[in-house]
Image (tube, rainbow, N blue to C red; front, side):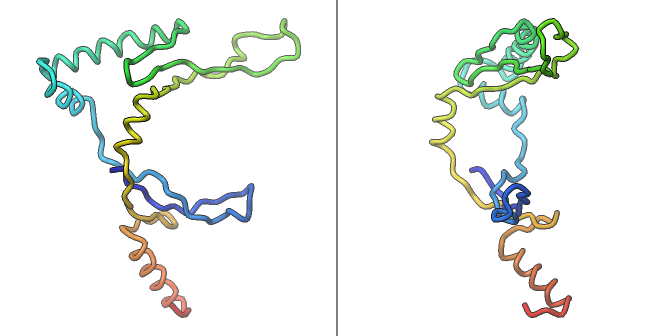
Length: 156
């Protein structure tokens, strides 16, 4: 299950949408490489340390392949590629590599991965964040809000 938090967002470009509540991912527990290796090894004859060794080997070769301009396919997960650009120049002769912007590594999930994630995904409330304070539920936020109004002399 994917938990979400409600956050009140500012929208300077569209005043009609300023202050609307939007769902954003709630902080989640990490699923680290060791967890992944233990889970993956349950379905194979490999030990978790062997799965880890394979992942480490792959991660050793990916940076060089990306630096060579290659797209790295990661099986059914998707692919990694570099994305970069530069400042513009008026004439081709004015271009110099110093005008390049820093490169970013971009992950593009496979169609299969996205279909499987969407099929297994369901959402669950994970609280609400208002004015930098996290609340467990909308109800607890409303109680806090009512208490603030009472303290300010306003009607709840």
